[in-house]
Image 1: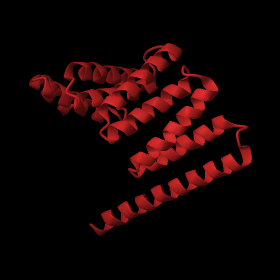
Image 2: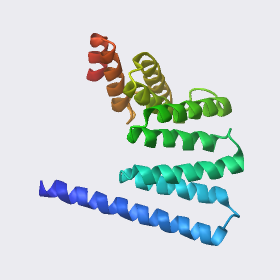
Image 3: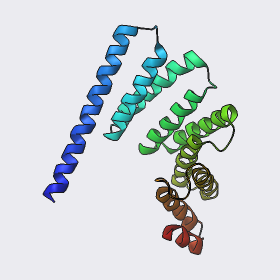
Image 4: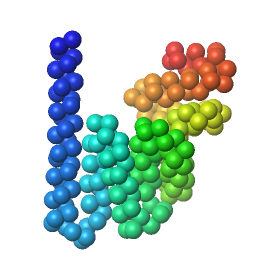
Length: 193
C-alpha cells in the first residue's frame, strides 16, 4: 500500500509540474509573441488544458480550451480541423463535469467539421464518436449511443487493429448501452471481449 501511495504521490507531482510548465510556456509565448502568433498561443492553451484535465481541474481546463477555441475561430473560421479537435476535447471536459447536453452538442459539431474537412472514418473521429456515445448514454438515448459506440469501434479497428488501447473502454461502454436496451447476450459478449 505504501508503494501505491508513493506512485500516486509521484504522479500527482508530475501532473503539478506539467501544469506549472504549461502555464510558464503560455506566459512566455504571450510575453514574447503578443498577438503576432496567436496560433502558437492557442496550442499552449490546449497544452495547459490537458495538464489541468489530468489533475481533474475541469473548470480551469474548460476555460483554457474555450480560450484556445476562441483564438482559433478568429484565426481560421468555424470550419477548420483545429476547431474540430478543440470542440472534441471541450466535449470531453464537459462530459467529465456532467454537462451532457452541451458535451453532446460540442461532439456533434466536432464530428460535422471533421467529416466535412477530412472525410469520414478518421482516427480523431473515433474519440468524438466515443465521447458523444457517453453523453448520449448519460441522457438515456441508448439507440443513438449504440450507433456512435459501434462507429468508434469500427474506426479504431480500421486505423489501429483489434489490440488498440481504447478497445476495452469502447467495448465496456457498448456493453452498458446494450444492457440498458435489454440486449443482454450481446452486452455479455462485448464485456467478455
